[in-house]
Structures are given as structure tokens and as C-alpha cells.
Image (cartoon, rainbow over all chains, first blue to last red; front, side):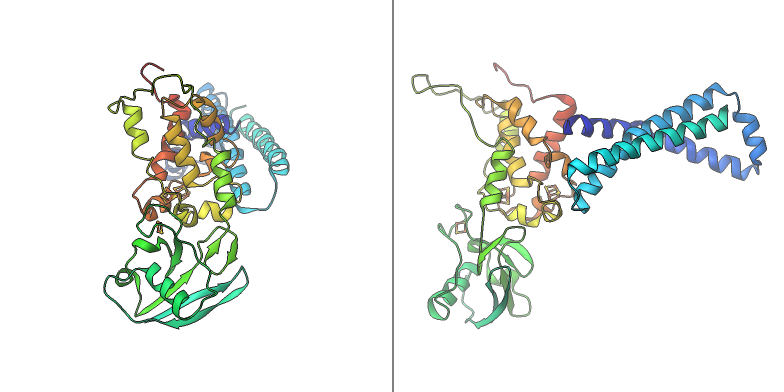
Length: 108
Length: 235
Ligand code: SF4
Ligand code: SF4
Ligand code: FES
């Protein structure tokens, strides 16, 4: 179990790294170009590319973040794994739902 | 020189002693001199006095050290020595710690060697050029002093963390072709509180008196999570 989580966290980190860079680059581009929210939505809505990009982004974060949070809680709080595991699972679900909602709003 | 030594258990205080400076004087010499001449009730551990047994480790001026091989001139700060028990281990009396947890974690990390040969078999022939053997050899000279365990912050934060020495031991077994439970040892080293908890910053390696690198051994275990157990010829 620990080994699987360890691998999942490392692999998701490797995949996330370029995704984060693209995301940051995109923000800089959009802001510098002075695009309005409406103009941005105009470009993203109906775009399969951005749907896939941000959809996979959300999935990777859903895998990566709760495992990291679990490690931090285990190391820094007196909470037991029995409590930490369901908390982090719920946190993962929360990210997933919020993320999918956000992607749907941007590309839907 | 002034020597401040911790007296008591978890609760206690430093007592100050004065000891003459001598040539080639080790920290253990100083503690022994104080125990013999000034404080007969002072509790501390040692056995070999030559850096083999690993029983004399203490915290000297804030750092964990093997006291029988540490010269006073190297560590005294403005003529003052402050000597405490190792960190991260329950204190029993004065400079003596309870090593129970430390060794139990070796077991938990799968540190018990299990052979597959019997008395009737010929001794195993080990090829010392085999890469796995070379890897194991780099980490086998551990003297069980718990200095790395005392230096590790993750041990301080997370009582379940197995710690550098136990995981280093597991790594040597994972690379030992004579160990019949390599897979089991690897699984245990990756259990809760196992090598995944290590931050890889190498404080253990920096302090190990025999220049083992537990952080490198732990990195080896982590890599093996992706690449599989080290390959063995003929096993
Ligand atoms: S590298 Fe790992 S084992 Fe070594 S001191 Fe740091 S956290 Fe502890
Ligand atoms: S790895 Fe080094 S510091 Fe740690 S117990 Fe072994 S000899 Fe001591
Ligand atoms: S007394 Fe044996 S290692 Fe120091």
C-alpha cells in the first residue's frame, strides 16, 4: 500500500511538472495580452485540447495532493492513520469534484 | 576545561566539572575521568574504546558523536564541552539511553538475515565483484551506534519512522544474495514509517562515524520501488 502510494505520488509529480509550466505560461500569455475573461472563455469553450489538458491536470492533482497531505499530517500532527486516511480520501474527492466543475465551466 | 554533563533522566540538569586538558584526550576519556575522580554515580556506556562496538555515542556540543574516537581538541567550544545523551531515544540515566526502540525498528524493517543453507551445505560462494554485492558492501560496516538515528529530524517528528540505520540494514539484505527473504525485507522497508518517509537531506550520512551513507541506501530502496529488486546472478 505504502509502496503503491509512493509510486503514484512520484509518477504524478513527474507528469504534473510540465503541465504546471504550461499552465503558468498560459496565465502569463493571457495576462500580458490583456485578454478579458470573456475572450478567454471564447477560446476555451468547446476546445477538446483544453478540456483534455485541464481534465488530466485535475486527475493528476487528485492523485498527487492527498498523498502529500497524508504524509504531512502523519509527520506533523498526532493524528493516527485511521483518521488521516479517510480525511485525505475525502480531500481527494473534493479536489476532483471542484476540479471537474471548473473544467466543465471553462470548456463546457 | 569546563565540562557540562547531563544528570538525570528526561527531567534533570547539567552539572559542571573541571578536567585538566591532556594530549590525545578523547571525549570518552573525559567522561571516564570524571566518573573515576569526581562523580562515581555518573552513568554512561562504552565497551571497546576503539570505534568498533558502537556503544559510546553521546551528544557532544550539540552533535551526535562516537565519543571514544572524538578528540576534545576537535569539538571543544571556547574551552567548554557540553555532553548529553543521544537525541530521539528515551533517557534512562545521565548519558545512558534506552536502545530498545532503535533495535526493534531493525526487526520491523526486516533486518533479520535468513539463510537458505544448512550446516550440511558448503558455505555460499559470494562473488565480490557482483554489483549487488558491491552495493551491500558499501553499507554493511554499521556499528549500530544510533548516531544517524539521533541526527534524523524525521525520527524526531514521527515516532513510527524506522530511521536511517534500520533502513540501511534492510538495503544491505535486499542486496544480499544469501538472504532468502529479500522480497519480504523490501516490503517491510516500505511499510508504514518506512523509507517513503525519508526526506533525503542526509543528516544521517553527515554524522555517521564510519562513513556509511544511510540516505543513499534509502534512495536505493526508493529506486527499487520502480526498477524492482537488484538483480542477482544465480539467485
Ligand atoms: S536522509 Fe532520511 S534517514 Fe537520513 S537524516 Fe534525513 S530523513 Fe533521516
Ligand atoms: S549507519 Fe552509521 S551512524 Fe547509523 S548506526 Fe550505523 S554506524 Fe552508526
Ligand atoms: S566504545 Fe566502542 S565504539 Fe566507542
